Image 1 (cartoon, one colour):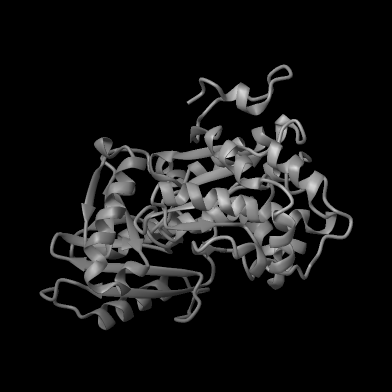
Image 2 (cartoon, rainbow, N blue to C red):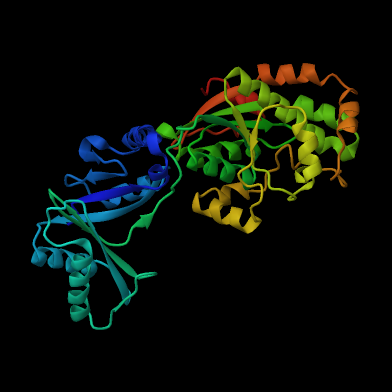
Length: 410
């Protein structure tokens, strides 16, 4: 039976004097996600060991895949420091693999220099014995089917096979918080996930426009937030539902059709920037991908950005749509995102939106109505929900707007 699980941290090893701070953040996060009272967490400078204490290892695997900052894990068996025990343990691990493949290599680290056999000699000796036991196997040091890891410590010898990849990146929240502008589409949940993977905690802002959009569109955003909350500290994310219908209607009534989307995005950035500055959130995050739609050409991005001085992170900026879809499937947001409920960016789309807007025209058109009063209203009436991965909430109430349905649901 597996004695423990080794958790490897990737980029931590490159961060010099920041290693301790990163490790502290990681240990704090893993303690929140896992039931550490039922197991023992052993900390080292570049890794952690989970001593299972009779806990079934499979019960941890799904949770490990939600912890950013982890590079890989492996099931470890510890044995005594004699060659016969090492071989017996290796064979038992190989026997647990359904399809072990036909190529292998042995990788040995001798942390305890008092062990009488050096790393290269032990790897060679073990390799020869394995070739004798498995005649069809071949050594492949560059891309083997199976890598046998041997780590020699004073307390014993740890042995494990292939490392299984995890999220990587940095512990979520270690780099601060960003405000994600969330639509109901494919892109923004993926952008949120990738941001968390790099150590950024999230708050989320959604611009809901009922009754111009359906109440199901707002419900979809809550479901998407629940999906990515799995990767957040304590598996909770604050979701800010901004009532955008009055501003949306004013745009349609006052702005030339080809500029509606451009100026709508500018209004969203104004609201998001004001909230972020009030809450001391240093960056905005969007799911924009260059050239994907009219509002994401370089000219459009330039004009839309002109209304804020806040930095905007665009994790998907140069990604191919198929790559975005693959990530959405991995994090289980794809099926929810493709539900056919329009948000305010996809309903009433102009037939010919401008792809080369100019700032002077956007400023001129915005002077056609008092948008500042509408922004003040939207911010005052914004409702915040603490969304957890197991939240149960439905907004599909009889004829009620989203804002009414949310009252009392904090």
